[in-house]
Length: 254
Image (cartoon, rainbow, N blue to C red; front, side):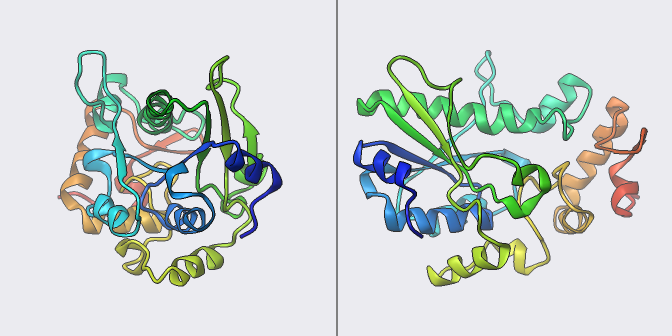
């Protein structure tokens, strides 16, 4: 990996690079590459914890495969309680969708940027690079993204924030190779059948991954199915018709 000229310049300027780590293969490969090029004191690992909807063992996998402390962040409601995905769905009476991904904005992006603002202030630093493991190969929508850009909404007079996708051009095969080159193994769910790793039951997940999640997490699966019935709103739409999680993956709850 050769650092782009603008990234090398930010390193020289003392920018702090915040590596968002979900425990998935892309995050793991991204950290392995960044660790080899970004000075240790300028690299920070951040994990947005999703609680019960996260795969078991994710946090341990991240800490095992990083040499930096893992800063765990969570979404907090105004009353001080932790905001959860299922609680958010129950309160809103609907699930997130591909066009309204409140789960990402509220539970991941929001807490991570709050941490970045506070951490910069504590360090007395003024330049942040938010590093995310998004790749062009994942979808046509992601392929249209800009891998490096100035974050206008998070920047201000005393703070410059950039968004960077270090592994944007990597193929899936190359991602796994980077992990092997680092003498590491991907999260266990991949070898067990998962294609991607996010929430156990992600609205963007494939039928294969959702089915695998139900098999591995029957109790959580039941909660999702029962919540769909409780609020009268399902996770998926087939055309303009709603389709339940049970029907979508073909595993019925007795």
